[in-house]
Image 1 (cartoon, rainbow, N blue to C red):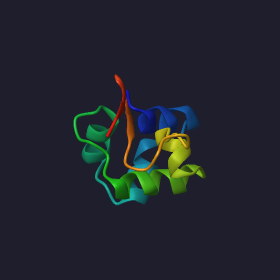
Image 2 (image 1 turned 60 degrees about the vertical axis):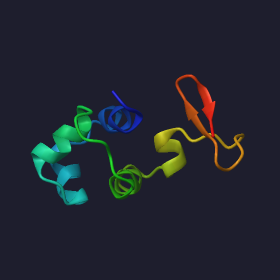
Image 3 (image 1 turned 180 degrees about the vertical axis):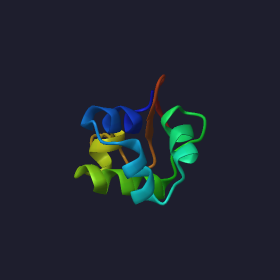
Image 4 (image 1 turned 90 degrees about the vertical axis):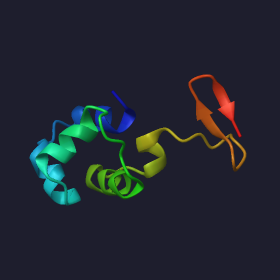
Length: 78
């Protein structure tokens, strides 16, 4: 399960409520929660706003990485 789905589940919020707030159907929201469909940037921003957290906190961005580099499971890539 990805970090966005984990954060949503940790809040105990109803999925149908969040789906509606994001402008998604329940099946589309469920596909994102199960990893079948990737979260869009718009989705992620909406989830962060609904949960009252920053996008960085929601997706686990790291401030110590230079611009243009992203963390991966294998380390950092350019």
